[in-house]
Length: 243
Image (tube, rainbow, N blue to C red; front, side, top):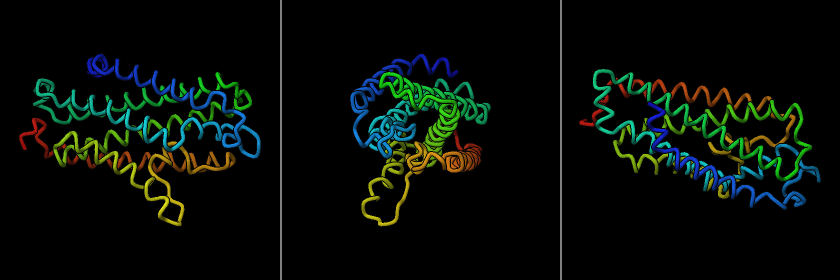
């Protein structure tokens, strides 16, 4: 089933990937000597990662792109002709949709980390390429995958509740953006979902393993809870959306 929906959305995915890659390279290329890209005058893995995936870029490009593609994927699964195939088993329909969302999350995480690696190579930031780089990239990839999947599963839950696809996306995006907008009005440092997803909360590389693993397990717990709530909702939901 995912192959069928991928054939529909692949053009948009390729376009988004190319646009994000081009924009990322334009933002980072030639800026290596700028002080904002350095920690104490030295370019580190995290300082470069945070430049590539700064908060504004994530909120204005990456997450909206994912929400739009996830919307198209969900839209495919709630088409009447698709729902009729699963009329006898709501759970099978839900499972197929969640698996497709997982594959989409993995695909997006691979794409944006590929963009990061390409940015490292093109900008010649070879000092960050060491054995630790692979370890860090694996954890970053895992957290981003869980983050994307949390967005997808949350969107499905909201859709179950309000039965409106457009406002579902608005609610999810608002939930992500609001903590970022209120930062300037609160003296205490707060981090948004996107901050944790792209590890803005980690300042020192030495704390990466502890904080990175902490974020991973919290995301995993949140995902499990959302799946349980989703499963409870699907048991009493008419997937033909008659009620």
